Length: 548
Image (cartoon, rainbow, N blue to C red; front, side, top):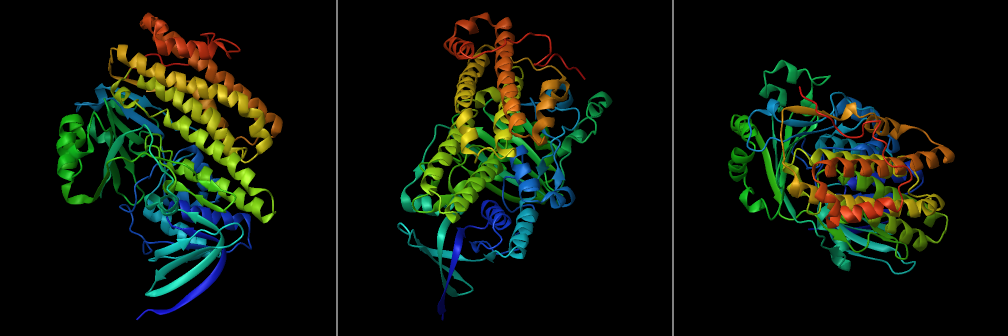
């Protein structure tokens, strides 16, 4: 028989205690020692290691959020793995990984990022949250909730240990992942133009790509020679395969593909995935064939990308974070970035509410920026998967995408300017200008890909040989005052303009007709409207040959 209902009031109730919900609870407690927070999590803790959740690779915004904003650097440095950047192998149908084009760094870049075992991490977060005074209830099921009107409190009923409990709160946060509790209740779901699917699984042993070669020059081309610590991408037309190492000793493997080119139905079991890998990535197939007994899990999504009509409500004091709101694509690992950005906005909204400031105004402004970042990032993926098999165009696209990310998105978050309304207002015009360049250049890459010869020589396209690339990364953790931040952003805006100019020159030197294409005309028009100083050609911005 159920025990009598128990009721408590909180400042914040978070529905969902995964990565998004737990990090938000910690951020709130760091900001306000006296805030009362309840986190209701469906899964029982501790959660399993290795095969808990997908989404193990972090990039610079998410890494900064974890190690600096939340203060988890010691855990990340001692109990997780430091990442050796992104690495790409144009290896479709190939077993000879040392004889294809490789894109990546020969050395580790200055800004630290991590490969995260989600089981280890979420167990740690739950313990830290409870130590900080968060009420964390695991193994609990939310039965119903009511969103408060005006100044009335939100009401949540949930079941834990065969007991029905009731909680009320001024703020209600949905961190329930794809369950999307508030999204479903308020009909906020929204499709987007990116149609792709994914399958993934974990293997109980490490996968070291260096074991696939005996070529000393190839093996020695990276220092340290630990390619296995990278997020390795095995790429081909319409798809990419990830290889991500985990601190528990397991390795995460995933296949992500354009739905029209490689339907998920062709790979939605381990046997089907192996048959697919035998054709497209035979060397990985060979390795996995001997690891079948170490398979730890298998899962898939048919359509993983989606948007949301609204994520913040200042009027009614609710918000969505993580996958309860929107999700883009695992390529470039933006999931933890958008958790970091969303949680920071939510924390700031609650701060404004505690000061009795006009929260609705802030919520509208922050949501506008959040959705703008979502739309900009979405353009990186839509109709771009055909390029993944192109060793000539994709490396340039990756260079541009990194430059935009490190040059624009990262400084705004890392320097804590996304919540600074006056600063964001001053940056509105140049941000809109560079956003136009980004949209135009993504179209240009598609047009370039249709003409590319897709040559695939044995070479390392070494990102660390591009001085501007290394400096952008190095400068991410600089502590900047207002004047320094303004100069950094102006320098980055100019760098992106010059990089776009250099990319046009490179593409059109081999394919002059690109200049007369619709994509070429539009990119040139957008660029000419704002280019302050054309690319001089003196300092190399693009790759030259990098044979092993």
